[in-house]
Amino acid sequence: MRIVIVGGVAAGMSAASRAVRHNPAADVVVFERGGYISYGACGLPYVLGGDVDSFDDLIARTPDQMRARGIGVRLRHEVTGVDASGGTVTVVDRDSGRSAVEPFDKLLLATGVSAVRPDWARTDLGGVHVLRDIPDGQAIEASLQTARRAVIIGGGYIGLEMAETLICRGLSVVIVEQAPDVAGRMLDREYQRRVRAELESNGVDVRCGTTVESLTGKDGHVTGVQTTEGLIRGDLVIVAVGVRPNTGLACAAGARIGKTGAVAVNVRQETSVPGVYSAGDNTESTHRVTRRKVHIPLGLTANRMGRIAGVNMAGGDATFPGVVGSGIFKTFALGVARTGLTQTEADALGLDAVSVDVSSTDHAGYYATAKPIHVRLTAERSTGRLLGTQLVCQNHESVKRVDVVAALLHGRGRVQDLFETDLSYAPPFSGVWDVLLVAADRLS
Ligand code: FAD
Image 1 (cartoon, rainbow, N blue to C red):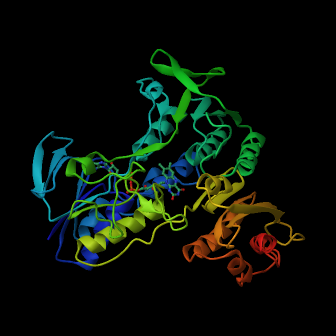
Image 2 (cartoon, rainbow, N blue to C red):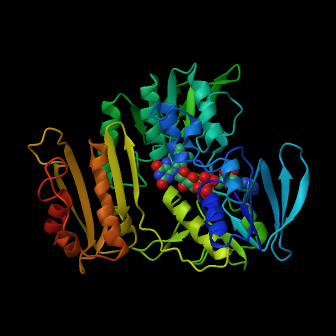
Image 3 (cartoon, protein in one colour):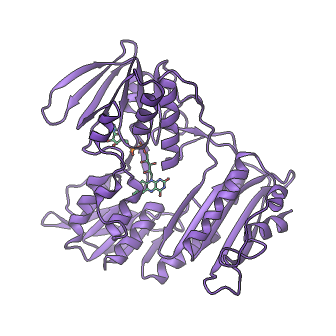
């Protein structure tokens, strides 16, 4: 049994580990076109910001550790072609340029996503970066040695995490966002405004409703961003305008691509081509609240999908349970979290949804560390079925209570179920009636 895995980060290495554990006799080999495997890309902003000492700290397992577990790892080897019926892939060694044909019994595509680079971002100008992997992080670190003015294009969670990082590094920071506000894909408008207020109160210049037209440069280095609202000067530009699933190999294998633009799979992570699996950011999943296909590329999903693909490729039987759209991030002191659907998303799907907003304190009001916490809870009006929640709080860890609602969404829970849940309580953690319970009570 030969299992070939393309891509050696979250999904790929989870799959490899599970496959050898499930079937120690399997010959498992991972081809990774980059120079690193098994690292936490999620930590990149924190290395750049100084909360994490070095990029090496993000590496969970080295190639040698993986080899010791019986997994073949080929770094800087890019898979360039797939012959699914013949059971082979074409692999190019990026150092020697040599190409080889490698056989497989089972194939996993764990190729992730690529950062979207609009035409204006396809430039050789120095100081222009995306942030997807360790080399991107290292390139930003090199630019930070001289940069003074940063322009972040895109107000999604990576752009917002980077805003904090760059302010901490002493730069002036402008965020340019085409949409009316930041964090637009995650939150309802009222909650977007709270995030923007946090950015502005920490010195970030937020320019929403502003479209980038081009980049300007001098002597090979970026000098500014030309927008519909005028020129913004900057010597460091971070382009964070979204990602696109890497589906080239799946297409080459003849696998179906879903309406989301990501690879379509069944619950066993198998594509429409027998023996070819897909997992991680390049792959779509099913939303348990809407029962629709979605593409929500996040770390836990990638690890879980990889694990399931690994078991199945090795002869086992595991199924992916779906997602509920949970997301969390921090910018400056503010923690921001959501799960399920926002009111805006529910409306767009034609659901009869109703929301309640509660502002309270995250700890008992009299406790010294208490900070305001704002919660929106959304439910289906006729049935009381929970649809989702959004939270923001200046004690950023306090928004982790989003997971209570995520767990209930997995079981298609109702508002009443949330209200009746026996949540823990002590003054340093919450009020006796936690803000989620207050919201559920008001929505009942
Ligand atoms: P990737 O990590 O993209 O790995 C895919 C690998 O495949 C790449 O190394 C690539 O080189 C390789 N590859 C592609 N094509 C080929 C080929 N043809 N041949 C060989 N190799 C190939 N998620 C969260 O849940 N929470 C967070 O806080 C969070 N923060 C993030 C912050 C940043 C800055 C970034 C970039 C991501 C963040 N994420 C976060 C997302 C999370 O990192 C991803 O969901 C996760 O890394 C996806 O893993 P993956 O294995 O599917 O894909």
